[in-house]
Length: 362
Image (cartoon, rainbow, N blue to C red):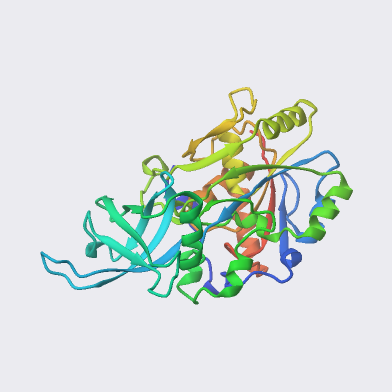
């Protein structure tokens, strides 16, 4: 499909730089097939769901994966010390990460980047990483001098929350973001971007959902920075998604399969949960537990196997996420919903308001 079919004009004033406070005070736009658009508050969510519905949540935890370091002067070949900005985006193993770096031209394979400082930023010294690979687009592989949980702790000490570029370009990351850009149920560290639809949930909201009889099931997908990458091709067929790692327990898969067999609705809290569910389902819609990587790219025409509804924020024009919501709820319907949301001054993107989308059949 032509990528320009997913373009729209968004005034900069609609981009939220801070979340609503408290978490569940955001607005909610409900989009249902054949029904008028419904302007609601996020606190109305329990009333929008039925007893027996299953809400699927991504319990990934965001690492402070935005790092600033220095590449020391080279002994040979020229080049003084260089200031390097690093955004980790995919863990390869206990010690290695793929990363986007700026300026990429300052780095060569074999260079060492020093993060932290000399004041014991982590375990008595700065955190170092060696460049072991560099692609033509400037993406690099970094091999750190720590591994596993020790590395995670070191990154937490020297790193900052990796706010999306449309926020980070407008204001500096601060202490509030360490709280705001993390869900209240985050458990498994590994993401470099938040599952932002779930930032709206509060303890009070979960209590209200429990009272309504809505079941919650958790899975994990570690969100990569590739979620923010624009589609640079003219046709969706030419776009390659970055792979992201998921884990779904046997208990979670069994609970979801039982719910589907009973005719209960499955609602994904966020596009990350939706992509995971659709990745582990077979052609009959049976979900299979396990772990792996997914690069599923959902565009209009995709036949959904599992998900009946989606809770999600408002997305960028020409993005893979806007293409996904158009696939679920209808291209014309979502374009009309976004025109309405802009006119009604909904807040967009990661810290913005939410939408509840129901699957359009056919």
